[in-house]
Every structure is written in structure tokens, then in C-alpha cells.
Image 1 (cartoon, one colour):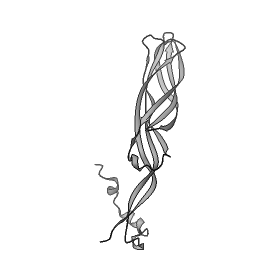
Image 2: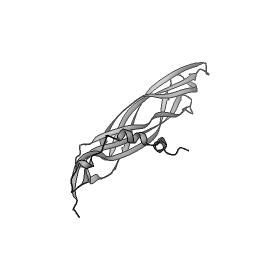
Image 3: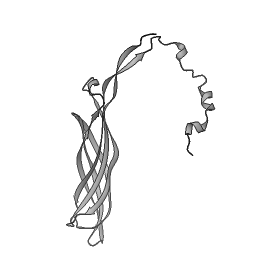
Image 4: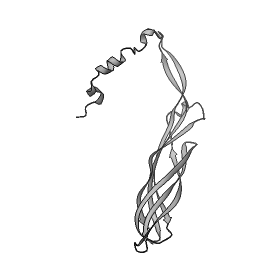
Length: 183
């Protein structure tokens, strides 16, 4: 029986991850007293992220557009307001001890773009209240160690994959096997 040897490989991997769902309320001032809300949409979403200790701070902004009627529903107008926000994503680290360097990369993805949930006229009647939701996932990429087993017998040419018959083998596969049971 041969004794296995191990090697440590230094590689980049996801070492921390977090997710943040946020609902927020914005109050928009219209130049005219609104009679009814005709529509609301959010556009031009932009954001930047930076790592702060065991969190990622996301600083962003978007434009809230509200189409409303005024003057007893006889005229309409669209009011646009740029809204800024800061979301803090708490990170969960996989192996805090195995991170080799503090030099990390941050990847932030939007799971849910800012979206209007509800748009109403405030109780006093002169402002517009917009409820918005958004969601992010943040990943920290850092250098870490991976331990691998070394084959004591080495590598031989017999272990190489044969590509000569690959097309023939793929043609012989049943399409049902590839698609699975969809019935």
C-alpha cells in the first residue's frame, strides 16, 4: 500500500458571501397638488460597492418617475426625483483562517432591480409616497489554500481521455436521457 502525498494550492475563490433585501419608502414633492396617481416607474439605477470590515456597503441612486393627475383630474404631469441609498450587506465567511491575504475583490450583483411596490398620495394630499424594493448579493473573492492528493503512481498516457470516438459516443446517447423525465 502506497502512502499518499498532499499539496497545498493557492487559488482565488469565494471566501465570503452575503445577501440583502431592502424595502424603503420615498416621499416625492410634486409641483402641483395630485388628484390621482396614474403610474410610477424607476429607471437609471447605478451603484458602487466597497468592503468595510465584515460587510459590503452599496451606495447607489435611481430616478423615481411618477405620472399623476392634478386640478381635479383635468391635467397630468410626470415628476422625477433622484433618490440615493446605502445598503449594508453582512458577510458570512467560509474559512476565515484560510484567507491568505487582505487583498480581495468584491462582486456585487443585483437580484431585484429597484421596483415600485406601491405609489400613493400622502394623507395630507400634497406629497407622493413611493414604496420600493431592491435586493443584492455580494461575494468576496480572495486567495485561499486548497489541499489536493497526489497520485503516488504518477500519470500515464493511458489515463488521457480519448477524443477520437467522442462524436460517435454522443450520437449514441438517447435524447430521453439528456432531457430527463418530463412526463
